[in-house]
Image (cartoon, rainbow over all chains, first blue to last red; front, side, top):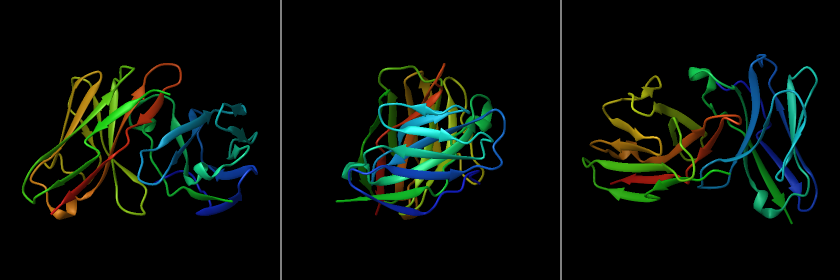
Length: 113
Length: 116
């Protein structure tokens, strides 16, 4: 079973920031938080990952709470092309099956004009 | 990001035939590759993990004789659906893990299999 909890769906206005929450209250010390997204009928796309510090790249920012029990993915200026299912996944960085990506149900983000 | 190529993107076959799906990491060597399956409006389900040169590790409930996985090189893994039946119709997605500092998994575009 997935170790994360995400809202099933969210809407966001085009051009506004999209903030996608994720709860992972049982995260272990050796587990990272990964975010992927899947646009309809395509393979998942890697977005960002982090351990405990906030991270930013050209796609998004990841904010992880100090206790690491939750995180938020931020798309700073959402566009219609950001409409997708967003998956928050916790996994060990190394090591056997604990390092496999196990997908939950994700959040379906709909960006509206 | 790294590129994973999956072929074919779509295949239609008759019941009882076998179908091979190829997955290639184009610009990196992947010691570990993964195969997922996705039903309509459902999430991805991990089927198996394969390491180059060794037998695949299948998840519980996945028939190893039905879904043959070969990971012959650091850039190629194949999934063969043997004696396909309509219930095998699904979206199959491969993934390759870039070993090293970032340890990120990259995904192919998927193969839509329809068994008539």
